[in-house]
Length: 115
Length: 112
Image 1 (cartoon, one colour):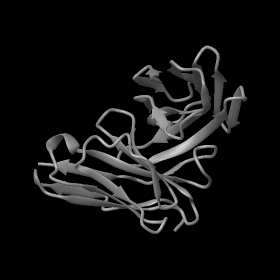
Image 2 (cartoon, rainbow over the protein chains, first blue to last red):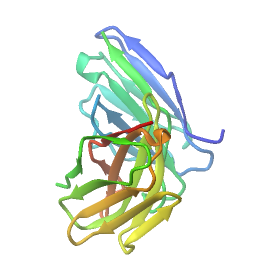
Image 3 (cartoon, rainbow over the protein chains, first blue to last red):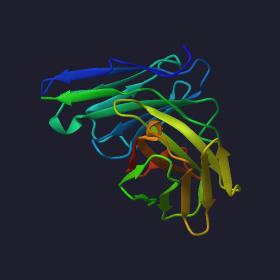
Image 4 (cartoon, each protein chain N blue to C red):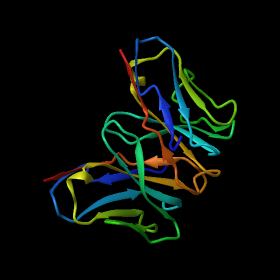
């Protein structure tokens, strides 16, 4: 596709449920990032992949959050035992070369609501 | 720890006005700075990227400046239009990191 694609666009989860959020980056993009955006705030970094390697997961808020990118393209962000504070928009971004020496392209995000 | 602040948090102007959005950051050792636009329910669209060695970038009616030593950037929008209404986010990438650190954004409303 032409841009970064995320699915689902919206997800409502009951507290305690596990969820999986998908990101399809721009074809050929080496770097992939996940961000969490709370209402009225700017996005906050969660984790970063270079190809299939997860180089930084320092922004993941707890061990309930897990991300993978097994073949260096599609990535999945998994949240186990969701809590109300997990409600946010989860944004995925990809860029062409290593790091951020170039422009990052963002998907439309997945809005997660935990009830 | 790098902190990015955007002022004002919200701005409402009549159509046709020129306006300035401000972004400040506490650690001047940035690699680059980007301005993004976010429409309600949408992702982020990159508007301008300024490398740390640059002073400004221009695209159409938009001009972004960077004063790295004072930790400031401004986004200038000329002849504003209702279609410019959105949230504008400033983000920095650090020398030693590839993460983007965002401000909280400025919500702009351009009234017809």
